[in-house]
Length: 60
Image (cartoon, rainbow, N blue to C red; front, side, top):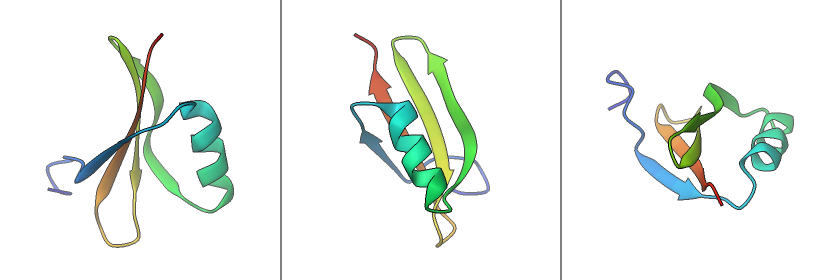
């Protein structure tokens, strides 16, 4: 799934920008910085086991 750039899991967050900032400070590497995608904002990070994880925030 990693080679095909498909996230293994997705988690909804209340504030994507704040969560991305918090995770970057902890050394998390984002392969896709927060961006708008229709009715949601998305970000994709790489975990330490070779998986992609998607974070998303529905737009109000």
